[in-house]
Image 1 (cartoon, rainbow, N blue to C red):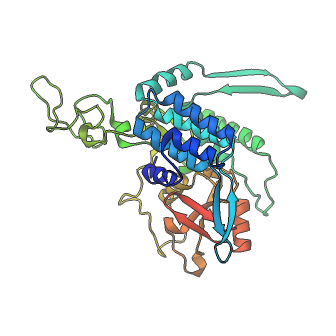
Image 2 (tube, rainbow, N blue to C red):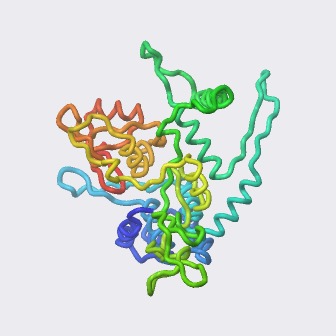
Image 3 (cartoon, helix red, strand yellow):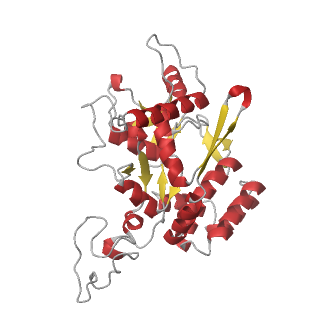
Length: 374
């Protein structure tokens, strides 16, 4: 998780770290009993296997999003508006994802193997002559399916501008049939799309740990070999393949997170990378500039991926539309001199994109997200 230290520090301003901070928020009336119970149970369930520092940071982040806050508002800044934190359902989803991230790599691999063994596709008779299919999928399989369907299931306007009246469920069913039809008829000619690729955020240490000894998983160079044929490292540096080896940081979450929220083990990420079905979230290189200024009007594929990771979906308050159904919006309009840069961009779904333009709304952008002034 990026900026974990900063977010945890922000949470610490409200009270002590860890479970004492959760209880202090409850005692102050800023955290309901249900969410307090969720956070305490989460800490108890992972503390035996999690890195203590990471657990404390992640618990602080979860608490920061779950608690209610009083925010100054009004022209004089003296009016206090109480803003509720995320609801229990969203908190539960965040806890599940964070719990998997805190699990050791080996535990994630074992769990993923068990889940893969339970993959299933069943067929049964439905109502009115229909046929019902049920798919049970592990996180890796779900990430692949989600990315494939997302690329083809967005609403499509007709040439005369008529709005797509199909329901989301109907669009996903049509997308599935399109994918299968392409695969059966011309498996080598399916169009490529940046939205159809699996975008995964994972630490370098997690990605390169446990690889075969002898070659660096980060740069691909051969490592120095000792008399017994094993890689050697500099004094004070951990052996390659262990935390801290090959210059990688000694701490960090074990898993990788997809744009749709599945947590994958490093082994699953490496497998997808080997098959070319993944876009690692190492953005901002010389070949993918993040700042284009006035040189281009439209955001590049690399910039959109960065926005997918930063915003997670439509940034309008209360909207849950995922990133792949959202557009990159120029906060300072390009037509009025705004730049095509990440710090001038926010993801918005079509409905809220229209509302923002209609009401001429503004927002504040930070490295951690977007806050609209509505």
